[in-house]
Image (cartoon, rainbow, N blue to C red):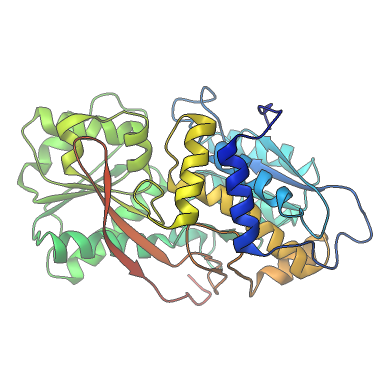
Length: 401
């Protein structure tokens, strides 16, 4: 992991650590890594700004605060925790597979990361061979659900299942917005095409098949031919990356298309990064696992304040997910009573985590290896402010594709 600012903790960070300890009640648990009293090692797989055209710091910043909060709460089974980072290229699955092997060579107790479903699928065979439990930050597409051909049973997902995300978005545009003509936009990778297939199915089941469906390359710089077919849409679903989402919104406005655009975790990233500003924000809606920007939960408010003072930015659900991942790793290793991979894997099977986590009241592993079962609909205003519009809760999944 890149060097962090050391020295005295900020007042807000100390407050967050104290608050987390109080609420989590986590002392050092019994057990530990086979008698080894050294630090427990975790390895993160994500990029930071500058490492690719779509790289963001949210994963790294959230994990940094999670690491500090867990260590302030006594570490894992009374042992300090170390977190190293290996860059994981979002846009190059072949490169990501090699980067994954670099992470494995560091011999961690658990892995955290992957920001791309396409990359995760490409690394499936390496994940199986490595035999190290992975807490994935990527979107949980159908091919990654435990039991599916592309899934590894060593992987658990921090984000809700994509079918749940898509259902929340479809229900919002059809029920809350009353849209009967919906357009679909997405990138042409497995993340985008998988979401479009689910959205099209859900809309058709509701008697409102999409009026237009378009995909494009994630690196495209002109989306005119993709946005023009959306002229008849009353609402647009667009699960894409932050930069393309900003381009979509700008070019929709340039072409006089003012339909609301419902995106996923890319929306708050685009807003916080000021990739989209002004009137275009009035049309933007996000379907996200949680929203630290609009949350009034005291723990999330403390996290937001700490994050802003530490990094000069507003956290997103991605930041909270990697923060929570360190707490989930703590719970899994302490439940296993060991840092041995097989013991941690067995502990993950029915893990339930409430201590320390922020994005949901409880992370609970289901048969599909999804840990999170809630979705929040967030509406933005032209000044960049966010308001929670609706919340959905979904049942745990059984195993199987």
